[in-house]
Amino acid sequence: MNASVPLITTTSGQLLIPADQVTSLLRRLAVGWLHAVYESEAQLDPPTTLGLAAMLAELADRIDAECIAFLPVRSEYDG
Image (cartoon, rainbow, N blue to C red; front, side, top):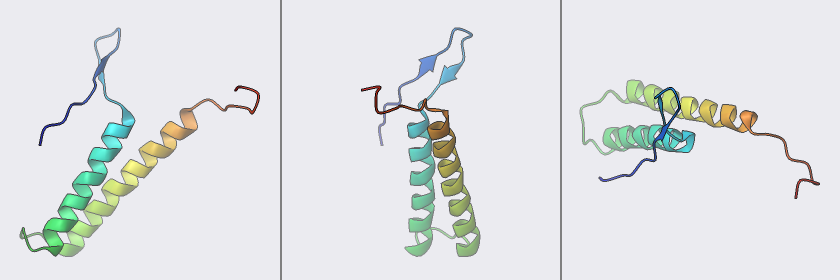
């Protein structure tokens, strides 16, 4: 799988990645684990894998919520 991820460099030299790319990766990883368990492609413990997948989805949801809360509020007059 080839994927291009836009990286942004800050003035201090840190690399940043868009949050939607991170949350998408977390959700795809969780779905991949669940498919592997339920299609018997891997010897994974179903309850443990379900718990880990749920934790990844929750983390992705929290990142999304924090990003949404960070956005400036627009009024109907902002156009």
